[in-house]
Image (cartoon, rainbow, N blue to C red):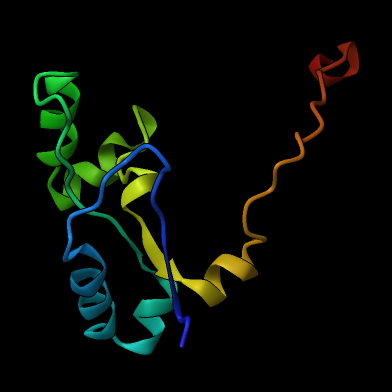
Length: 110
């Protein structure tokens, strides 16, 4: 009943069984884990040789590397996400308005 959100960019193609496989993976989690899980997947590039090095890096990340490399790049690619709808709404969903930028003043350095 609309418990999960599945992301996909408009220019991407999805594996025919992706949604079913991700829903099954989410349903195997305990309720508290479902609420905290951002589930991603591997992907294929088309054409296959376009940014092959990036695809190889992203698809080869271990659980440990997913955490360690988060400051290099987004390690779970948004078009592969599945998550709890409730959690998405609790976090405020997508916010399209720019956030205000506060620049430091001299007082910040005193």
